[in-house]
Image (cartoon, rainbow, N blue to C red; front, side, top):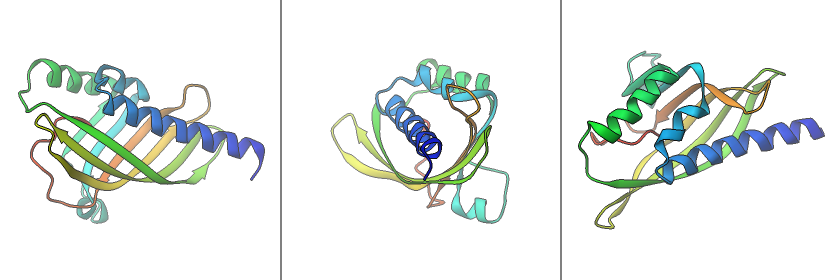
Length: 159
């Protein structure tokens, strides 16, 4: 692997790690800054993705919509306090040029409730289109594909 390719792969891995730590550390106000102004963020099931169905559990197509989601979480929604811990692995760059990388990675999310209960919350993969032409790298598209179509109705914190 060429030095430029290694550096690009490292920067993509760092983006994914910073993203996960942002959510895990409850720094939700920083979460939208990982996305381009015009972007796609969707949470869907593997079945919907396989059938190319546009409906998902959550959809946004601008950074402003993501900021609104955070505001709703902080100010309007009522849900039991909880935390996530993301585990991201098997990061593969599927396509890449000087401007955009298409990346797939696997995730596992553990949810920790206020009383200390810890449970596997979701598994699946991220399908990302990442703008890499300039720093910082930003998500142009992040499709969260959950392995199960049975998602806990308590989908409070972004994936």
